[in-house]
Amino acid sequence: MPHFDFRPAVMGTRFYRYGRGMSGDNHITKIEFDSSDDVFELGFELTLGGLSYLKYPDDYMDIIGKDSFNHQGYQPFYVNFIFFIQEGMKVNTLINHHSIYVSEEMLKEDSVNIMYTVTKFRKDLEQEFGYSSDFTQSMYHLNVIISDEEIKLDKNNDSEISDFIFNNYNTIFKTKIPYIAERNTKNE
Image (cartoon, rainbow, N blue to C red; front, side, top):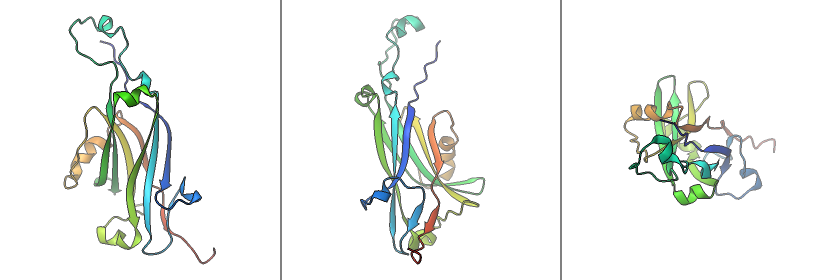
């Protein structure tokens, strides 16, 4: 039986700072705090393309040789954002995740921009929650995974996320979150 690859193309990505409206917030490369109680709301934009090709060919019934196979032309899917912190080599702690359904109508548009608020960082709460990224022992990660069904993860079951974050076939994008630093305002 022929295999059809229903993964979309990632046409663009960017991190941005949500909420302030300043020109430097449209595309960020690191997370900087202006003060100890500053809130940094990290947003992520993903552009998917080639969506109109994510469908079975018109002659699919002839190809597989079945008369009674019930199929749709387009193949809708879920885009799952999984934000977690990796501590050492084995401990992956889920911070949050979100799923967005890409419908048949969206697929017909051929490309779609999806904007997602990853999380809010606050320097004064970093130690309280125990999430601290130093890029040597622990790092924040964002993985974007596609699936046929909505992924529901439990924050209390950290071993469950390993099934998804190490699934390279369904992962369409993954990255480490930009370095977090306190802005030096003395020289500005």
